Amino acid sequence: MNVLLERHGSRLEADGRRLAVTGEVGFGVAAALSRAGRDWLAARPAGSEVIFDLSGVGRVSSAALSVLLEWTRRARRAGVEVACVRLSPPLARLTRVAGLDTLLPLGDVESA
Image (cartoon, rainbow, N blue to C red; front, side, top):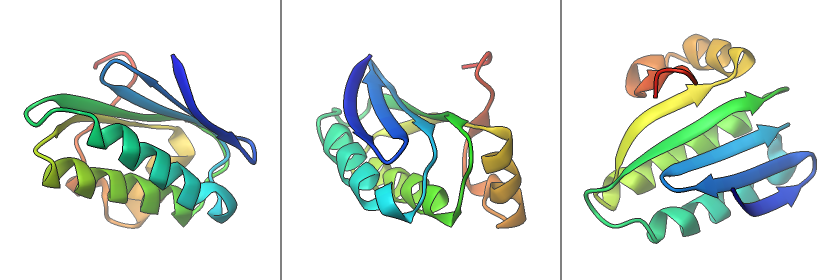
Protein backbone atom coordinates (compact mmCIF):
# COMPACT_ATOMS: atom_id res chain seq x y z
CA MET A 1 0.00 0.00 0.00
CA ASN A 2 1.17 3.46 -0.87
CA VAL A 3 0.42 6.04 1.85
CA LEU A 4 -1.02 9.17 0.25
CA LEU A 5 -1.93 11.05 3.43
CA GLU A 6 -1.63 10.64 7.17
CA ARG A 7 -3.12 13.41 9.28
CA HIS A 8 -5.35 13.99 12.33
CA GLY A 9 -5.88 10.28 13.00
CA SER A 10 -6.74 9.50 9.37
CA ARG A 11 -4.75 7.55 6.84
CA LEU A 12 -5.30 7.36 3.07
CA GLU A 13 -3.64 4.55 1.14
CA ALA A 14 -3.77 3.37 -2.45
CA ASP A 15 -3.09 -0.08 -3.82
CA GLY A 16 -3.76 -0.91 -7.46
CA ARG A 17 -7.38 0.04 -8.00
CA ARG A 18 -8.26 0.51 -4.31
CA LEU A 19 -8.31 3.76 -2.36
CA ALA A 20 -8.57 3.03 1.38
CA VAL A 21 -9.28 5.32 4.33
CA THR A 22 -8.74 4.30 7.96
CA GLY A 23 -9.13 6.16 11.23
CA GLU A 24 -11.34 9.10 12.03
CA VAL A 25 -12.67 11.35 9.27
CA GLY A 26 -13.71 14.76 10.51
CA PHE A 27 -13.84 18.25 9.08
CA GLY A 28 -10.21 18.89 10.07
CA VAL A 29 -8.93 16.34 7.56
CA ALA A 30 -11.74 16.18 4.97
CA ALA A 31 -10.32 18.75 2.53
CA ALA A 32 -6.88 17.12 2.54
CA LEU A 33 -8.40 13.65 2.05
CA SER A 34 -10.54 14.93 -0.79
CA ARG A 35 -7.55 16.53 -2.54
CA ALA A 36 -5.30 13.49 -2.15
CA GLY A 37 -8.03 11.19 -3.46
CA ARG A 38 -8.77 13.51 -6.40
CA ASP A 39 -5.07 13.51 -7.32
CA TRP A 40 -4.99 9.71 -7.21
CA LEU A 41 -8.16 9.50 -9.31
CA ALA A 42 -6.71 11.90 -11.89
CA ALA A 43 -3.98 9.32 -12.58
CA ARG A 44 -6.52 6.54 -13.31
CA PRO A 45 -7.19 5.96 -17.00
CA ALA A 46 -10.71 6.34 -18.36
CA GLY A 47 -12.46 2.98 -18.44
CA SER A 48 -10.66 1.67 -15.37
CA GLU A 49 -12.37 0.57 -12.15
CA VAL A 50 -11.76 1.72 -8.59
CA ILE A 51 -12.84 0.60 -5.15
CA PHE A 52 -13.36 3.12 -2.36
CA ASP A 53 -12.68 1.27 0.88
CA LEU A 54 -13.83 3.12 3.98
CA SER A 55 -14.36 -0.06 6.00
CA GLY A 56 -11.61 1.03 8.40
CA VAL A 57 -13.21 4.35 9.28
CA GLY A 58 -14.23 4.46 12.94
CA ARG A 59 -15.85 7.61 14.23
CA VAL A 60 -17.54 9.42 11.36
CA SER A 61 -19.27 12.63 10.50
CA SER A 62 -20.90 14.02 7.42
CA ALA A 63 -17.38 15.04 6.36
CA ALA A 64 -16.66 11.42 5.42
CA LEU A 65 -19.76 11.33 3.23
CA SER A 66 -18.75 14.59 1.56
CA VAL A 67 -15.33 13.17 0.69
CA LEU A 68 -16.85 9.95 -0.63
CA LEU A 69 -19.38 11.81 -2.79
CA GLU A 70 -16.67 14.12 -4.16
CA TRP A 71 -14.51 11.14 -5.15
CA THR A 72 -17.52 9.45 -6.76
CA ARG A 73 -18.35 12.57 -8.80
CA ARG A 74 -14.72 12.97 -9.87
CA ALA A 75 -14.45 9.33 -10.92
CA ARG A 76 -17.62 9.49 -13.01
CA ARG A 77 -16.52 12.71 -14.72
CA ALA A 78 -13.19 11.08 -15.58
CA GLY A 79 -14.85 7.97 -17.01
CA VAL A 80 -13.61 5.81 -14.13
CA GLU A 81 -16.10 3.25 -12.82
CA VAL A 82 -16.63 2.97 -9.08
CA ALA A 83 -16.87 -0.82 -8.86
CA CYS A 84 -17.52 -0.98 -5.13
CA VAL A 85 -17.76 1.19 -2.05
CA ARG A 86 -16.97 -0.51 1.26
CA LEU A 87 -18.18 1.18 4.41
CA SER A 88 -17.59 0.65 8.11
CA PRO A 89 -20.76 -0.08 10.11
CA PRO A 90 -20.97 3.49 11.53
CA LEU A 91 -20.48 5.01 8.08
CA ALA A 92 -23.01 2.60 6.54
CA ARG A 93 -25.60 3.70 9.13
CA LEU A 94 -24.94 7.37 8.39
CA THR A 95 -25.18 6.70 4.65
CA ARG A 96 -28.55 4.96 5.10
CA VAL A 97 -29.91 7.76 7.31
CA ALA A 98 -28.83 10.34 4.71
CA GLY A 99 -30.53 8.32 1.97
CA LEU A 100 -27.31 7.93 0.00
CA ASP A 101 -27.06 4.14 0.13
CA THR A 102 -29.04 3.80 -3.11
CA LEU A 103 -26.61 6.08 -4.97
CA LEU A 104 -23.48 4.03 -4.26
CA PRO A 105 -22.39 0.54 -5.37
CA LEU A 106 -22.08 -0.74 -1.82
CA GLY A 107 -20.29 -3.98 -1.04
CA ASP A 108 -18.54 -5.65 1.85
CA VAL A 109 -14.83 -6.30 2.25
CA GLU A 110 -15.06 -9.98 1.34
CA SER A 111 -17.15 -9.60 -1.82
CA ALA A 112 -15.05 -7.25 -3.92
